[in-house]
Length: 188
Image (cartoon, rainbow, N blue to C red; front, side, top):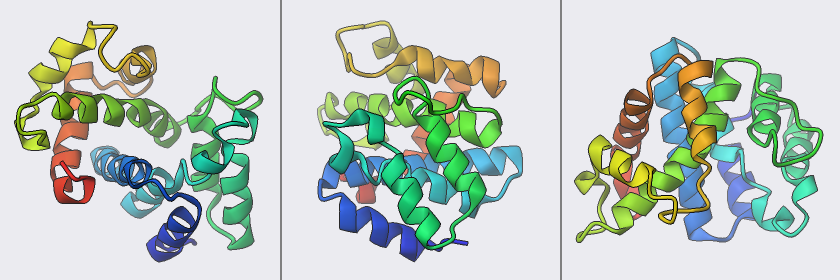
């Protein structure tokens, strides 16, 4: 199976933007927490989160190839089918032909991917720009402000309730606590 060091190398070799890397670190942390909650393999789930967008900079102008490059890179090192399937499913509805998420790991990645961006946006409007100042309540206050972080697909996040059986406030708390635990790595 792929190691974290191999995943980081793929990510850093193909993603130069510090903010995009930080997004991947955040998703990794959240996925590890969700794996703990569901009593699943934290390493496998975390690696899927870490590397899920590794080809984004190379495919942002050719969105239909997003995830395809990552999958090719992973297959070259004989990664893990579960990781590959989650990466493909996280782009469901964004990349034509990518499958709908089918299991807890895939739905977790699909739902938390957008949530990390919303939490970062809330942190950035705090006076100190720190995750430690963000609460579930402050995220929920911004939830209905469609002009705030308008690129965040709230419907995608909210699928946590139906597909993972986690109420939205609890899902936000899991993600927020996970991100706060690595705040220095996220620059927040």
